[in-house]
Image (cartoon, rainbow, N blue to C red):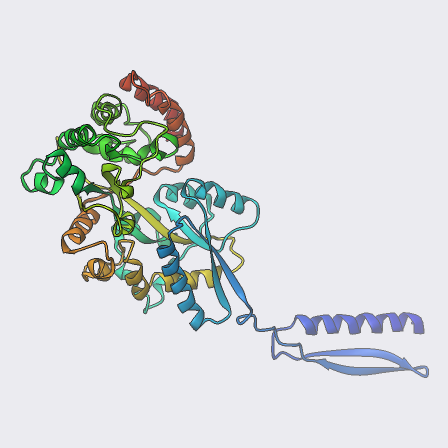
Length: 455
């Protein structure tokens, strides 16, 4: 073998040995035998290499990006307080809350996920559960939360978790399981000379027809006001803001298995016809294109969640809440709007994000969140803390909220929800006119969404 060839082998052997050393686990010593030629003599040299330990990245700065849809200063102050408490325990971790308008929330987060710029954790609404879980974009929180005895996973209400479970996997933790209630302006009821909803409820007279009659009386008695506000989103992007009317007579959006449209059933048509008459015959509900805010005193009634009540504290009128009215089948189960905390599977900081979500939804912090959001933790819900923590509640109002959670039904959701809603909003453009044929529009709507409901 030539000296030149032997030197080449020697160099290659040395390089290979060093690479092996660099790739070796910590504490492992690699021994390499190198052959070399010195003054014409072949020699073997033993070289040992101890690899450098892997750097500890657990203390490197981490910023968790966390989108939310609230713009409330009170909500953000509470969230920032939880983040600050977490940072005290984990000085290298900060949380950046990104506020996105509710109407744009799902689409903007979707764009970030599709564009390779995923948030770490965030809020998600109940309507997104089937499609986002099916798409595989949410991380499974189950293994971490169930194995942590201090977290007490069993304290979470199983019905409240239902939408977010797939076998043993857990894809979201509810931080708000809020039943819709009827908020009412006592001053406008008194001005109209009619019984307030709490009196009607006590007398067994609180029905959907009674709600409609009261709304008309208020609109007639006080010019410039409406008896009921349903919100402009009903006409633009959230048709199930009318879910109470839909269910008043036993109607529903689609079957429980999501395969059959029920919008055009006789029960659903009666409920939507009642709302349509309130808008265009009684003129007691704002029509498309008008914006009315209950908190300003321009409406006698509105549907709201616990988080809606905070802004009423400093309002210019006396107010209170009652459950949904009764329909032909009895008391109407309130619609439950649910919001959960999720971790996105492609998060570059997934383990840290899961740990923060565990911290955010532990008993102590759920009790803080109960100031605005009805909890899914049974120990917190049954502790009386809702009335204690929320300045908008007293014992009577707390009872309305808790009863609503126990009797309520989650708003409609479906794996093809986004596509279905686009079709419904498009078809309902013909519904929100004075001379609409409600049955015909709902028949056409069911036909339009049928392809997305097919099993």
